[in-house]
Image 1 (cartoon, rainbow, N blue to C red):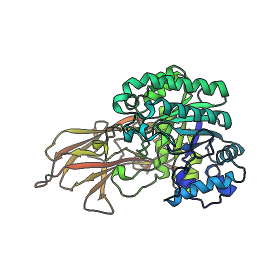
Image 2 (image 1 turned 180 degrees about the vertical axis):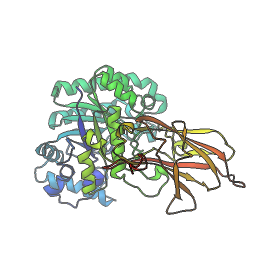
Image 3 (image 1 turned 30 degrees about the vertical axis):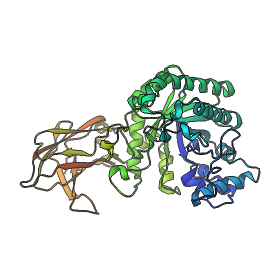
Length: 490
């Protein structure tokens, strides 16, 4: 049965066990839950393992830190002693969190990374020439851990994480085709186990890759899993790509899951800039950027939203975002900044879904239409009376004012729209230009939009390519319609 959920995920490490000084107080132990309590978040998800040890005193698997003492990193030392300080007081670190989530009115989902486990035979590891999840021993171990979680902990859900880290981490490429039926049978066994133990009280879901092709290349036949009624939800994502993408290609998964009366929770990744976009620093999204991604997800038909890794400690801005995102109508009424996804490493990375940016235009490539598609949830035509302004911003590397471009939105030229120019970067202002169009006559439409950049003439004596780095569409609302759009009555 489809369920609306707003999920916040904590990976147990970066903003929790790594940072608090032992001995851990209960107040510190409750932080991951308490920091999202009172917002729209109704489900807390917790990563119980990262592949090298569990973050609770398991009777089945190895606890994190058992095999790396004495510790060579303060974060690992803190993790071990924070857990131990609770255990010494008769407290199970995982049970502390499940109970706190329930006290705060939240459901609890335990997330388990599937490709590896703490204490795994080194010969089974892919980096050592092993076959990873293709080994029956690896699958059997993870099955036993899931059975322990279903039996010993009052969780409302179990999440099988197949998305980490997004590359060839689950199986060797050559093993994937033959493992497709094996992993489907494995999921069926896990489903039967969970439902026999918990009935309808514990949902079973997966974190999988965004496209069907990417999943099949890793031996994951997600469509068949849903067709056989084996799953209650899915979260499509690529772990290593942490860039907020309002247009992540998941329509196929939404359709497939809904046919099975199962849920899809749209991922809201935490950054708008990092190494993937060619910057040295991570930049978190503004409320307007997050709101646009939220609106697109709701418009595409997701059943809920799933986010994590927000700027920590969570402050007023983060809690405000988490409060708003659960209400599609409230999100629809707010200002938005639609950011087109980009991946500067895409050419060297065949494990990523395609992104429109960056887009290179050679100096000799005159007259060619270079397409950039993006989705807009706002009903522009129906909200003209409340829209203050709409701005389209395009950042182009190596652009000079002598270049001649024809930029078209849904096959309408923007030549007659007002355009402001500024430096492309605060760090290297000489590197390019931002073009900012004030859209008054040529407006985006609700749904799919097509932006096209056409080089008409490169500046004489300049042969370097242009590169479209960033595209943003900003929609701002106000109490009155824009005077620039509506003639004055005076």
